[in-house]
Length: 495
Image 1 (cartoon, rainbow, N blue to C red):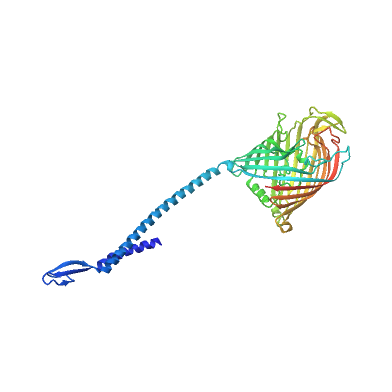
Image 2 (spheres, one colour):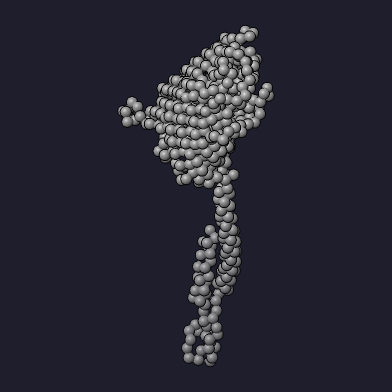
């Protein structure tokens, strides 16, 4: 609008000049006759140029308006110049902010993410050995199984993780549901490690710190993702609490990483990325314990997921993962007083602390039907109550699990996975004092209902037959078999 006024003003100014020159009248007077003429001639003297009074007023009016338009134009120019300077300053400010934000984003502590989960359980025994003097049914996987127990917090985890740069990642996980003696809910460090990669795709990397030992498949699977309530004793006995302090090297090809991620996006439960191949050395004394000898454990891990689409259209999208693992080392199990139906004694030193195991695993991911199985064999330090010593004895055991995935339950986005799991184990539980030998035979049938990403509910029926190995190795029923049936429930909320 203001530019139009400027154009009009300039046009008016030019027009006034032309009109003024065209409308002016030159008059001449004859020197003899004093007659007025409009044209020059002999003896005529020019009197001057004359305009009508009305035309002079109009001209002055146009000149005034022209001056006003000029003043307005000057003001517009000043405003435009001011706005231009303001926009320039604002643009410089935005650029500076972006540069500051980019610099801040490069700082590793601005890339740390926080997540976690909590598991609340309730176990209701249906039958069992509860007669005075008889062994109490207990489980190494869940301390809330036993007499005089109700609600419990199985896990309260927080995970802090992030990339410090393109090659170094940080992971830390404490747990706030640790039991110390009869007291509950102490904080304990579970994981603290750095992944040091040799390429931006993280195909080759070294993990340094306290982390999961890559032995088995279910051992490596997060409890947040695991379908069954507890890990199988046979594999878990190799690395109680699944973790130790050491160095581990992993190789994960990009195509396998992509396949594992695609399974996770489908809501399937993988074991996490612990490499197609992995090797490592670690202390071997279990989580948060000082080293007790000069020897270190060695571990080798292998697994590979196969897309079964090559078998035909019926198998398209089905994935079968198979692998094998091995560990070898020395586990110095401290001795202590004990009493059992076999006798009593006080183990001071062990005769042989060496341990060697091999294991195999196979998983057909549920789409919708799935199977999962693991087995391991070996030998390790084991209490021999007859000889009153810890010695190297054979061990073996494993599990088989079937499951079926049902999506959009009750017309919602929820997922339901019924399952049944059978496990057995005959061998030492080296995480307990004197490394007592246990015999486990258990069947668990249940269903996990993933109501949403934030909430899951698991209901299960378990029938158990287990060797009683309490912390108090002099308690009645130590090393005796206990059996029973129970309903188990777990509410898990993810955040």
